[in-house]
Length: 284
Image 1 (cartoon, rainbow, N blue to C red):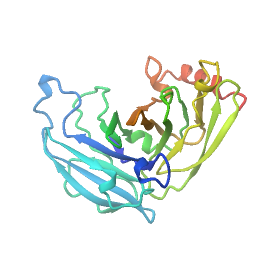
Image 2 (image 1 turned 45 degrees about the vertical axis):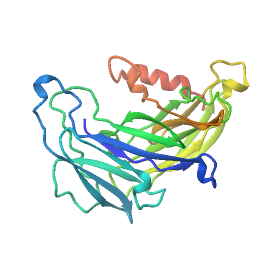
Image 3 (image 1 turned 90 degrees about the horizontal axis):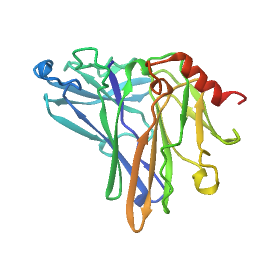
Image 4 (image 1 turned 90 degrees about the vertical axis):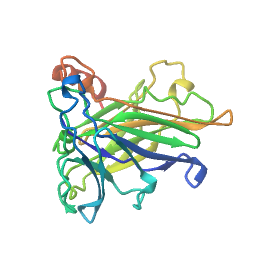
């Protein structure tokens, strides 16, 4: 399964303060993820990483970077001369003649040589002051072209129990069609009483950063008093970032959650997924 690599937008912990900026970048390597000895010499060719962005309902190629086999590149969002809110995405290609303009994103190339389920991932890096944290991620091609989908996640990976730190949720949504302009509602609930705490309007082909409500565990006696976040019309990949200055030191941690389909074995156990969703969203 091939993947895209959206480039997250930079954001500020305290809007208006340049010292509170969280900068993002992605690191990509030209190497097959399933590197057993018999595959070492397979597909050992150059890869072309194309950066596309949306303008006037069209994908525009911003640049194309050649990467030799075994080498890697880093793309910093701050180095792109693009508005902060513009969606930019990296497409992996084995061709040098990639389109300059297109309505539908080109299908990304995969170096996989067998049926290994290991995803071809990028390193998503986030820097706050002198501290950097990262995670390995991707946006699957199948997800980007899906017509119907839904979203359910929890905030259990947030780590803002340190004084001076706050937690943010980044939501990224990618559609291959540049003409898509749907807007979705993302609802945030408290798990203990299913009270809706907030409701977000999120457009497709976008990144948003959202400051999560204060850590409920720190203000209550309930050890399981978490948030759950749902959308019935679209799928997002959530990134949870906790950042701040504690004891005069910059601190940042980055985590992300997997979709419910990856919580069960056999993979995509639909009966278990339906039961999980119904337990959380019934009555809402």
